[in-house]
Image (cartoon, rainbow, N blue to C red):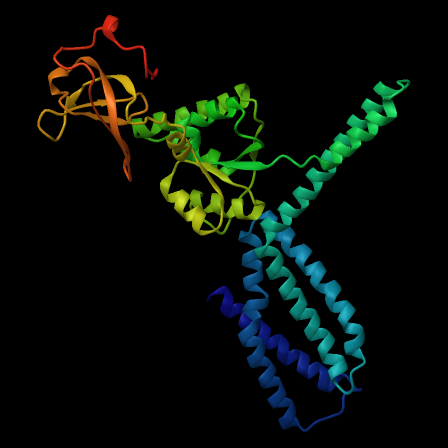
Length: 392
């Protein structure tokens, strides 16, 4: 026999016992015919048989299997719901007839249920609200201590009061540093460490605990390639913590209702209203669809590629044949392909070329050029023109 069936039987017997006690032992209750009492007892037993598991077994399993965070959120929601129901019970109790006795109890049940449900579902937002308030108060206290030290330092100085007012005005106008979430792919890529050292990234880099767990899982993979990528990510994270000028924090933020790491990252970014640094194409698209700002490292790399204009000269090494007859193909240091008309004769040698046109395609930038010095097997450094030269 299952625990649900046992609870239903006990609930039904308890309901029958309560009805018998009310009508036979409580002399303040008016007596009814025995048929009415049996019908009320049967109806109460049926209702108890249906609802008993939902008020005994289901809450027990929920409290046993749920996390401590959900329990705390449920207690907070229950407290708020009871406070609201107690405030509403005062006017409801003044209603005529039996409504004044029934509606306060119904209000307590309804608002308690709503308080628990909303608090558990919005647990992360509540935690973030308290964390934000705590961090704001802590920063304000640190700022006040700094102002006190500055006042002590400026004491006795003739212009100390003016400088103190200026500092207070600047401190009041100074915004809080923004937070930027780091994706696993951006950490493994490693270029974020170089970018942060340049000073272009402003704010605090945030690494959620579930991103760190994914890095550790990749580093422990049986596949050697995945294992090397995971270890590289951990090394880059260590480098970010030690060498970068941008502060980095690892926060214990969990999104329980989302299974995948990308989904958790997007939801956390929506909750905290902060952008994500990544080079994952799919994560980029999903985040943009949900209104989350994305800082894509690949897009940044494409934006800072050197711009070549028709007529400019540059040295290029011909590495392979082109699609058309006589064409040669070379590459810049950033991987941009340069198609050299008539460059096949300079195979495996460096030749100075002149850019003829530049095409921007979906796959990237493609540059067409022709040899500046035809009739030689390679460039002669003493004969290279000093004009229109670029270093790559």
